[in-house]
Length: 150
Image (cartoon, rainbow, N blue to C red; front, side):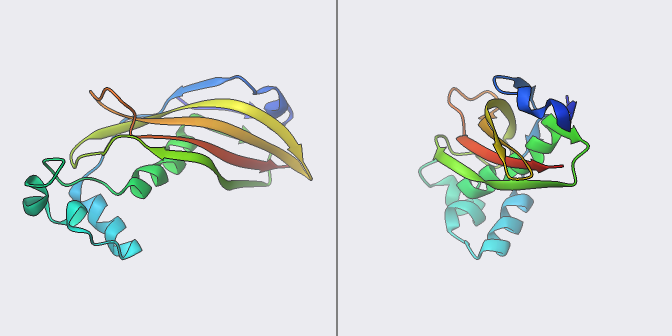
């Protein structure tokens, strides 16, 4: 569910747990599109037959594909009214903890860890956890940095 706040209320978001995004299935088609876009055609991602005999028993998503889904999930979790520009400013400390097998469903939890003022706006440091449905460990944990300018 999306939390919508006015820009004037962004400074008070530190400590806010924004909850969980919707689930998203990671399909072989999505993996192939990412492989094509990044020129990363490693067999563990794009050859399901060979990958079935590999270390994970199936083709897996690229770690950076799973991480890139944070953008989609983030927009599901927070919307800020009254801004002129929204910017993905970067990432701190990213870890790829568990592989995401083709056909798995993933979702993200986001907790606003810090809010700092920057020239013309505010920056949110957001602790993000992408989990795999039925998994015991997250797929990705990262701190995303997002800026909102009024």
